[in-house]
Amino acid sequence: MSGKVENVGILAMDLYFPSQYVSQTELEKFDEVSSGKYTVGLGQHKMAFCSDREDINSICFTALHRLIEKNKIDLHDIGRLEVGTETIIDKSKSVKTFLMNLFTKVGATDIEGIDTTNACYGGTAALFNAINWVESSSWDGRKAIVVAGDIAVYGKGPARPTGGAGAVAMLVGPNAPLVFDKGVRASYMTHAYDFYKPDLASEFPFVDGKLSIKCYLSALDNCYNLFCKKMRRTDPNFKGLLSLDAMLFHSPYCKLVQKSLARISFNDFLNCPPEEREKLFPGMSAFSDYKLEDTYFDRDIEKAFMTYSQHLFDEKTKPALHIARNVGNMYTPSLYGGLVSYLISKSPEQLVGKKFGLFSYGSGLASTMYSMNICNDMSVGSKLATLIDSLHETVALLDKRQGVEPRIFSEIMENRTQNYHTAPYQPTGSIDVLFPGTYYLINIDDQRRRTYARKD
Ligand code: ACO
Image (cartoon, rainbow, N blue to C red; front, side):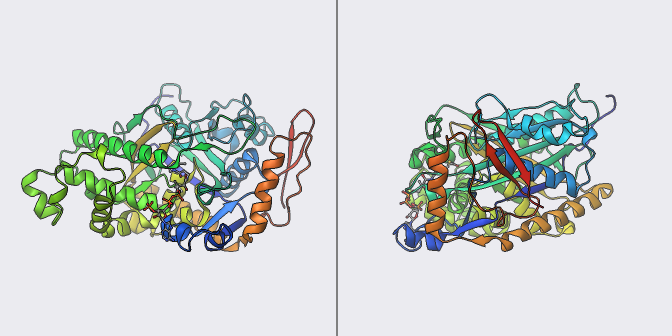
């Protein structure tokens, strides 16, 4: 393929979340924890979940098919299909190969890409693979699709209210309305046992909650400082958070995201020349001698910078939390649910020319901060409006979901746990409750092969 590839980014996107949820207020009562622990302490409102009718293949298929149908995508125009997930049902066969069912029907089999896994980071790695392919010498002129999906479930205990489920599908190619900045991705990768899934017979992770928060915040510090350094290479006036119109985060729970925005302000404070600190950060000078690594759980710093950054949070981050608050942690799609939420909070005219920062974190750990611009080229203006209209339609489904009482939710979780490794297996979850167009599991045979159908 010859010619210069311009404005590589997201051309279209869509989202899937399950049709059932449990209220966090009701869950607080059911779990007999103090009132406000999940809703105020974690900042969560509702948590989506799946019965045994859905698995990682089905939720990714639902998101992919929705994207293809709504955007009338020609399957022969797709040259790469990437999946990011940490929900593993087969150790060797990728979810991508299952998604090929849609393409093989029309004879489209020349499609690169497989699955990428590292906790909540796999979706971002899959997206980077797709962008890199379009910008590479291997590109043949077709588009790429990235699907990120997970079913986030925890055993009974404090982590359970931080679950969720969902999938996002993104069409990637040139001349896009959402364009990725080049040469500024800032990564921080290291080894940590903060959250991992060593028990392959269980859907639940091993999680060290406090360590995972420390790892998340330390990854954020590292990525943010490196990202600012890289941005200043091309724009010496880049002022970090103040130069970004929106700052989006991977969202395990909304309170951590608000603390993360405050953490960025704390980094800006420490990086500020001492003579300007009092002017730019009035009343904060007592924190001048602190070191980042000593402050992950420092209440005074957290409180001071959450107060300082409240208006920045309201403007740049809070609009991105609508789906996270109402669905929960979707793992790999969580950051992209944030992007969807932010996009539908504004009109296309308000978005044109804006710059977003994005922070992706996956335990273990892998993390990157990167940025995207909303293209101000008028020729892509209608693509942006179409993308946002289509997302409004999907997000409206949040209000059409069925609320389920915690006792039933707990029974459904118990049923998933008991049968996670059963074969042959006939799922019993309701099909009636699913949204039209949802794929669901019909059967797992004695060779653990799965068959599915689509709800009319
Ligand atoms: N009203 C208001 N706030 C309350 C109340 C109440 N009644 N009760 C407790 N809280 C607050 C606490 O003060 C605490 O606030 P803080 O975070 O500002 O300290 C918050 O609610 C949580 O309560 P804790 O008792 O500290 O924590 P808990 O033991 O319940 O566990 C945790 C929380 C660690 C987040 C747990 O849910 C977990 O392990 N989740 C999974 C791991 C995770 O999401 N990690 C994040 C990054 S990794 C990833 O994405 C998976």
